[in-house]
Length: 64
Image (cartoon, rainbow, N blue to C red; front, top):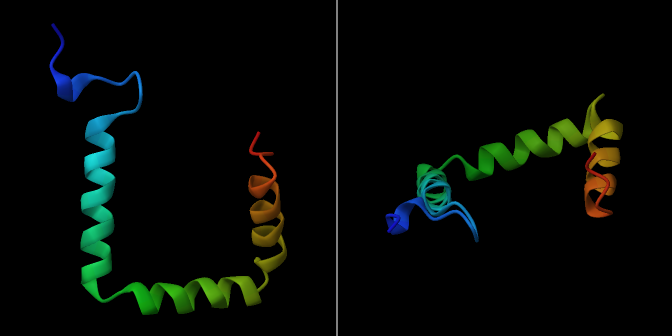
């Protein structure tokens, strides 16, 4: 029988745990505000049009 940590039929459990842990660490790091400002600056900068196009396409399911 497979170890339950290795099950990936409905998702990669280990990857999900790592993601949650990293998200919690980031939220506690105090860098959220800084990164939000960086994202806002990127949207207002020269790459803004490309970022907006990517956002629209991924929202419409056109990722490939």
